[in-house]
Image (cartoon, each protein chain N blue to C red):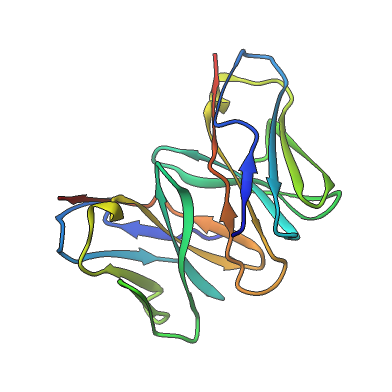
Length: 109
Length: 113
């Protein structure tokens, strides 16, 4: 199984700023997903981007995928204190997901 | 709303005890998963099940077993708990086909003393 690796490991920004985090993976993927984990709500699915897509939007989230570089980025615009959480990227082959260590995002009010 | 529930949020057990962690989902999902999460190591898959009475080993199955007697319920068993099994345990479920989005439970923080 392969592992998505997030970068940076930790990120601290002010409320209202944008946050960008990156993910790299090693082999071909079917799709790539981003999840968020905070202490109040556990792990929650944010967005899925398929291997034949290059960009996807969902509210304040924008995900890009570059299969030639085997990388993805998650952009959170106009961040809020409630966005403080750990963010994980994961790919899947079949029904299994493999997670990296995550990016810890801190949004200061 | 999909709901995945876990039997306990916090659990303290002694070394050598047999431990049962229960997970229930209400969305008729075929797939169910058990992960453990440790600082710096992310989530690691212990076991998963794609149907009743079916199971597959994940990346770190040693020291664990699982049981799936009913579609909605997936149990993780620590036959003889050890201190290195102190961790956060997360259960998840998903449909067999489709987007493979997984729905997670709130987690059980297990401490083995």
